[in-house]
Structures are given as C-alpha cells and as structure tokens.
Image (cartoon, rainbow, N blue to C red; front, side):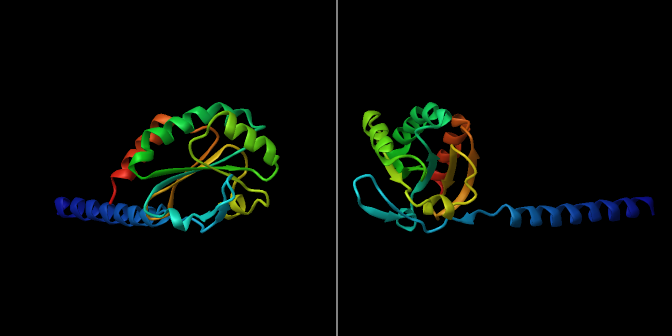
Length: 169
C-alpha cells in the first residue's frame, strides 16, 4: 500500500513538473521580430523581413555612449567571425545621435556592417522596449527574437549562441 501511495505521489509530482515545463516552454517561445524598415548610411532602404534566413544582431547604440563605443570592436569581431555563414549585423544609431557624428564614427572605424540612422526613432520603437544603450537584440533565421541584452553582452556567450543559431536549419 505504501509503495502505491509513493508511486501516486511521484506520478503527481511528475505531472505537475510536466505542466510547469510546458507552461515555461510556452512562455519562453521566441517572439517575432517587428518588420521594421530602415535606411542604411548609403541611403538604400531595407527591412527586417528581408533578412529572414540569416541570424541577425541588431545593436542599438549612440556615439555618445561610452559603453557602446567600448563594445563596438567586439561587435565588429563578432560580425567578421560569422558574416560568411549567414550572419548580419545592424548597428542602429539612436534618434538623438547627430547623423554627422554617426557617419564620422562609422567611416573612421570602418564599420563592416550595416549602420542605420534612426532619425525618427521608429526602429527603436518597433523593437521596444529600448530603455538605454547599448541594447542588443539577436534574431534567429526565422526572424524571431531569441535574446535581448541591455548593456554590453558577454561576447563569449553571445558568440556561442550565434554559433548554435547558425547551425539550426
């Protein structure tokens, strides 16, 4: 009789854990990235939807943000490491950042990825909440938000996640 009661308790605990895990899996599903449109420094227009099929790092930054400036070489290194494998980087300059400063920064540091001047703030609003810079959003190949980083990311962990996302079909 005791064994049956212990078995019933164990099965009940397993059922509760399975339900809890199922709820967690539902809550933690990636959300679809917004289909924000943006203008590159060269004046050409594009959208997030056009980047589906690639892993995309969207970095919201400003030239006046010391953490942003500090992390930018690591953003560049991450881009260079994965760009040949279907990885894209968008550096979205905040609306309060003067366009001339953004252009000077991008050209003087020879940023090898797409730089976006978000004059109206529409790109940042579409990815809300962007509460400060730097904020980095990582998208999978299906155009879903997989991870948000507020502040400088742990680039070792970020690159490991990019590696995993690039391996997905």
